[in-house]
Image 1 (tube, rainbow, N blue to C red):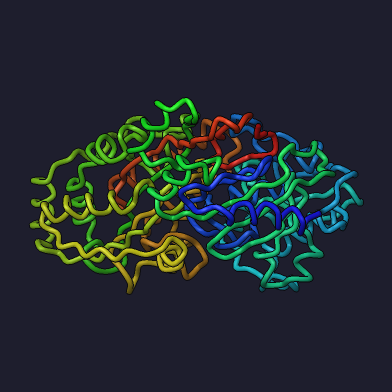
Image 2 (cartoon, rainbow, N blue to C red):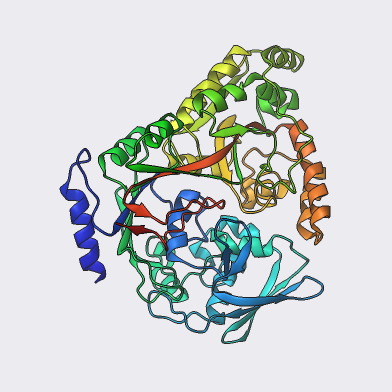
Length: 517
């Protein structure tokens, strides 16, 4: 069935030219923004990859439809000890992986030990960049076949939310043992769709899991096509070559809204688009120069003219979508090129030459070339000299995730997160510098920020957590390790044949209930 279905679907796709392509019956074709890096959810970091992964795998818990609230998935229920250190999960007893091997407590232990235990025989199939999400887990214990226990070194407020994020998805231990370091191209989960094929730079194909524990999908298959160029994605959508277009270019939203053959979907969520600044060396090692860059960039023009109102101006590493933790007292840096020039003069940095890494496109990157060019022009008008270097998304990630030190002075980045802890913890702490396995590619360091973030993680009272996060945001705003740019409202377009499609505030793409007429 698997090879036959893949052959029929792919043949139908390839038989037509891009200008006249029509998608196969009951096969959903999604226009992705880039080639995935990995379909190992413990290795992947980009929402582009996670959009595929959440349809192949399940986690112990998941986000309830339309929310960021946690509900049962592979675990039917759980208990938390009074001291907040022990989480005990009862597992479903009727689930198997797509390769026929059983899902049980031993499989759960394998997954987390693989990420967290350097002595685990398959630890080298990493790296596992987002295992930070579980770094308070001291041990994972099998109580019986369908009961598993997580013991923490200290209370860890985001634990359940992090389990619902793709890093908490459960992979088949047998498949990891079989494929080793190649597992990311041979994924096996328990989800509504099972992996069929990954043709590099062409497609990823998954087919219906007829035995899915939560009800088999109606679609026979889903094809994810990487189409990096935004104009090409739009052309494919208009011509019928794809059924779903994610991350719709702002210029084209009106076109699709005016056409009865398409439905435009919008959903607010926790998104931050920023430009990281190299605080370790070069001009941006001086806080005055970093602040000057924030004054120099006209964020209102970026949001209104380039993004055409599909985003709001940002001022914080915690987006307003986390309203309980967001610091409403902050105001975005105003557009003030004269103040920027004054700060540059004060720092002795007039005419500072900087290298700016820009990507062609990627998860949540919001028309990055146009945005990058506009930012370059604003900075140069204020007295910087900016050289842009442009890279394909996965190449860009490889460069930026390795850290800006000795490479560049600034780089675009976007994150969609599940908890107010995630982005600042992974990108602003001193212990999250790239050489320590984190994503603080700016090499920013502030001891007070470190202390506040660590305290917020262990606070069990949400009001206390909120105050810690708000204090952290105020410090980071002044330190300006980034140019704070935009918070995006995600968008997608579906053809009139697609039904039951909904965007989620998690920015994940749940396709189990989608149908196609």
